[in-house]
Length: 155
Image (cartoon, rainbow, N blue to C red; front, top):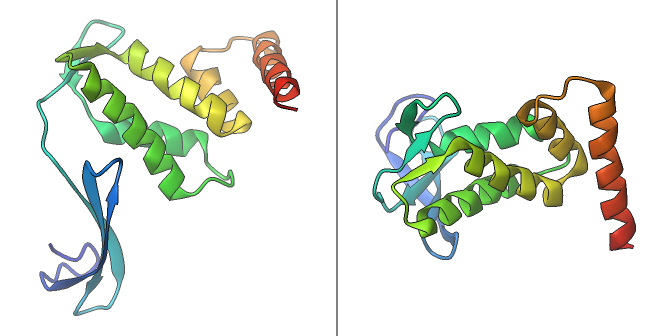
C-alpha cells in the first residue's frame, strides 16, 4: 500500500479492526518514510450493482457517492467521520442484501433520508432540502414541524 502523502510503498499496519459485521477490515497504517498515518479499508469485491438515475440513465453503484452526500449534509455537525462511514456501510449492506443487480437512485435516497432522520436533525434537513427540491420556506416549515413531532415522541 502506497502512502497517499509521500507515495512511499513501505507502510506498516498499526491496527486492524473488523467493521460492518465482519464484511470489511479497517486498517490504520503508518508510512515508514514520512511517519504520517492513514486509514485503508479492505472489502470483498461483490457483484456489480447498477444504479438507475431519475433520467433513466444507468451507472455503476458507487458507495463514495453515498458517503459524500452524508458528509455534505453533516458538514460542521458534531458527527464523527466513523459514524458517517457506518451509515454508508449500513446502506450499502442493505442494497447488497436485497440481491438485485439494479436499484433506483430514489430507493437509495429514501434509505439515506431515513438514516439521516435518525442521525441528526440538521443533517436531515440539509439533505431533504436538496433531495425533495424545496421551493419555498413553507416546505422547510413542514419538515421542521415533522422533526418537532419526532422530538416530542422521544421524550
